[in-house]
Image (cartoon, rainbow, N blue to C red; front, side):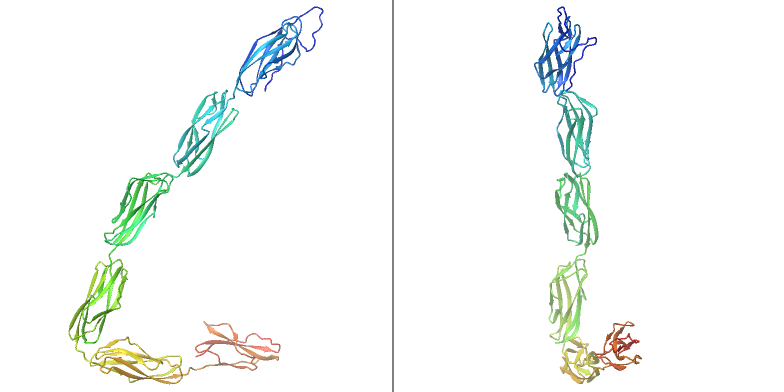
Length: 634
């Protein structure tokens, strides 16, 4: 509160408080005021305004002012101090302060008491308390909500001086990424009750929540006015395909492959697909109509088809046009057209020629899937008397390029021509494959079978090893089919014949006998051959001798040590391999007192290394002697 003291006008004589001087003649002072009233006008509440009024003593004697009382405490006399004396003909200044504490009109009366002729003088006071200038914002916070990155949103902000005095805005600043101001220039004066409007802009640079503030600095009591700002940047709508490409792989020409495709709006705003197109021979799609709108995060699923028209690779694209951040989404397509599975036979016909009634002729047949897709065989049937099939079991599947082998047999039942077929049913492009069969039965003519030599000698064979010898079967007078071959001694076995085996008349078939003796002794056996020859069994005598496996030992000798306290020697042995000795180990169970040692524990077809050491009376052992290496055992 600012108070002004009492001061006297220039030219006033010195006045002093106290009793007036004595005068022999009666003198009277007269006090007069310059104004009978004082109007303080408008004063901001909480502040003080002081006005002065001149009091003049126009009498012939000094005037003593004893007091100045104010009827309303909102006003106060601040100067001079009382009592105060005004000399005759002099003036004094009376200071009165107005300090409103509330908004409104105030009045008061100042009563001045003195010894002047007019001992009680009054002054009427008036004034109005007004509020100080104050800034308020509307709204007090700005929430921009969601704004797409790359776009901007503007709002109008108003600030008002709600007080009774003007306010000077010295600075306007904005903080926070993406926020900016326009339409306000400082310094800016806003009178009482007036408003000003400016623009706040949110232009997000990235997806996510953002915050900031507008700060207005002024001379108002609220010298810093803050307006909170908030907003969220959202990614613009964008389309993504899942999968990002469609590979159909191999699809059979004439059929169709399908795949499910999903497109998703991965952004934060809706996307409208205005057009959907597809390119590439054999490709098509269904289930996606345009225009269609996908909200943020929403997906749509549709079907893509590949129906190849020819063999070979094919490619294409699905192209989606939208208002998304990626206005053109391309989904590559690929696939390969392959020929349908097809069965072929090799040979395509089987002619067995002439075969004796009751005998059997066989032929190997191959079927191959020559197409590009797998074929499932569901059935295989054979027609015609005397014909049969083995080794072909249905159902079975042949991959592209895969083959299957089976056997076709002809066993004529009568002496006449025969015909038939093998029919294979499948899901191939040729669903029925027919293999033509033919043959002729002839009257059976019994052949004869001879075995040479009559006795097959295998010689001497070491026990645990094997020896072999060959024999021969010869057909005469007609073909002979051998159905079995066996021996009556397990040490002898037969090989080299795949039974049943047919030997045409005048031809021979070789076989092998293997002799594997288990004991060292002479052995014999009878080989029995069973066939459809005139004599159904033929025999051959088998002989051989088992001999014991040879044993070996290594005799070692060395020069005696010259030391006088040597009591014996140790012998060490190691395996010899890859031109080097392995780890040595002692082989004598007790100390060898001489310079000779026989190693009887060697293995056949093995090589060794040897070394010796000398042992003294203290049982101390010398270093190794010279090493003898690569001692080979037969």
